[in-house]
Length: 273
Image (tube, rainbow, N blue to C red; front, side, top):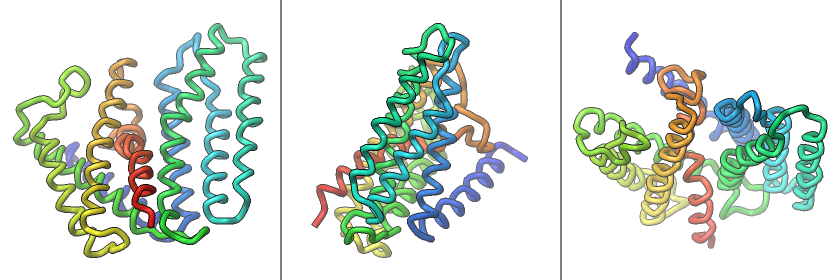
């Protein structure tokens, strides 16, 4: 099979999995986000790990999973917000464990451990919170996260296809030579059209509000993609992983989501009525 066929089949399966997880409710949605978080953190730590610098991969994954689960149970109204305070002693344990790890650069490893949580887990926490906005405590709605994924997919797919065929002017040659201005403009236009269509089926937001969300996702998602490319350039690798045939790794596929999720959350909070 050609790379394009493999990419299409993998992408189709991923779309079905994500739509089903978001649609069925908060727990399947949270399970999906936890999976993306753990696999993304693993790739992040693997890219930056050296014989002298060893991030606390298991502890980082457990701490980040605990952070996301705390967000979920607080948002669903099952427990009081004070539960989040338990993250502080849990994070302190990682610092204490560095005393007993015989590595040459323990603080560099600690910095990478917590930087991974900052870059991957915190954006996922913001995205996990989105289905609970504009609703009574504990009430979940799938329309906005589904719409956000659809806007990301539309922008990425059209930008890739149009840029591959017609792209001539590089968007950021030093960081990502495959991206072009032509592809970016085509993806943005497709995203804005998709936002209009989403407003017809997901009336939780008005057409102009969907358009605003689309712009936030397109601009911030593009920068998220470029920052991920900067990470790969710094470590000398082409793809962050191989778990998704034709797409690379989790960070390759969800970099735009991680880059746009905090800003999409801020935008939606400002729209709260």
